[in-house]
Length: 84
Image (cartoon, rainbow, N blue to C red; front, side, top):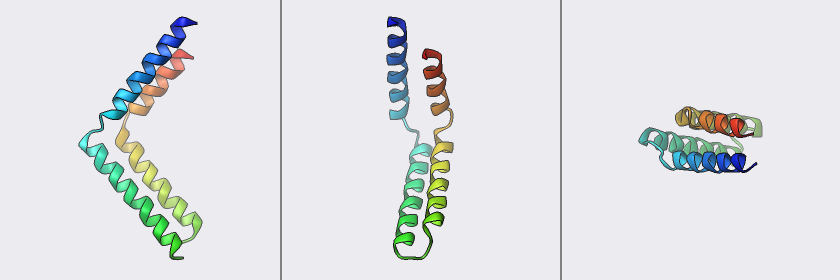
């Protein structure tokens, strides 16, 4: 049990450490995604697009962020699965 707790804590620290070290490309992608999300909200508020269209734009923004993060999330998931 103690090994699992230690492994999980280590994985958490590793994940947080990796998350804190965003590359310039990842930072740019996050900014682009935030801009798309803001644009979707503004367009929806103005009645220019439907809620479903805004959701689609926000999903696109999420895809941009996910692509920029690369294997970081996959690595974290693999470590968590190994612990559990």
